[in-house]
Image (cartoon, rainbow, N blue to C red; front, side, top):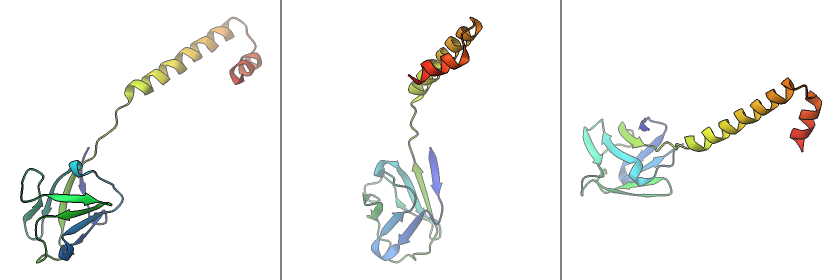
Length: 123
């Protein structure tokens, strides 16, 4: 899921060429592009050999020299957070629940006692 991080989800330390992520722990490959909007300069682009970075302990250290920028400059940080899709497991669980409900419904229609069914489910 592509997301634009807002101020408050990161801090920028221009003199250290570092961005710290707050509330999100991205992998380096999730970070798509970082632009200093105030100065209109791309400061991270994984497709450029001169605009790379390293990520350690939720801190991104930029290769781009940001020392002339201000810590309060607005950054536009796009990340792509993968969404887990374990639908197969969920569908299997739902199918099992539906099957059990059909069995209970059948037993009730055959005159089984509700309390007996509850006791057998607990076992």
